[in-house]
Image 1 (cartoon, rainbow, N blue to C red):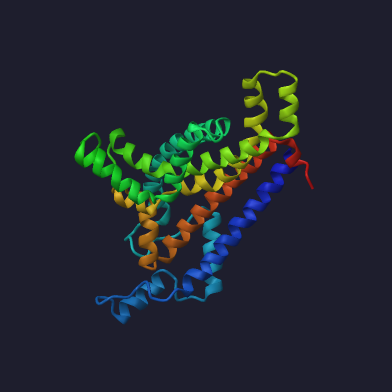
Image 2 (tube, one colour):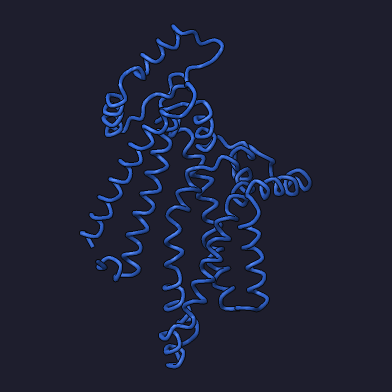
Length: 305
């Protein structure tokens, strides 16, 4: 198991380094200029390029950035005055993570339960109801769902606030809007996996031996069917927890998604690069966790060539 973990950790570190290297050079070939505008004179532009060391050759910039990155420093934002990328992440990430965790706590358990009920009642009423919910969650964009929730539950019924991020009641609507897509994906994946396993020989043998149905479902069906769900949880958790621009914009949540989009629009090299590395490292970390969980759930995986 230790060898398996070390191998996965090494692959994760190489992946993050490659991501940082590729994005570092790609962001600098985007059309436009981070220091452009009516009030920016050539002298001011030259001074700012020198201050942020963008006038140096790319290999020199790359070497210095990687050195700072190893020390945990992502540099100063080109647009936010006297603010580092680390400070932007520290201020915005807790809000995005709070929203994402609430959405996942709704989506994952309910999605798994819907998938199980749907598979156990295949081609019956429960199955149809669960799949209707799943299709709505997959087909309807989350900004449409968010707008409908705001209109019905906030504007018309006045049960919840329309927007902002102040207390628990402000988190309910954005959490529901963000969770439905993940809930639908988990439910459909769990249902398909359960139906595939139901006809396996070891399930038929367990039924022939007279094992209680609840034991067959828990010990044989769910444990084997949940592996595909675990596979997709890594990138899903990373995507939801690190912020989503649309939901954050609709509900006026000051999260990372807004900073990322504005950074691209403003050609804020250091902010876009820092947030991309942060997002990428989070995805790689979650995939690393999934690999470890996979090895624990199914010992055959960690010994496979």
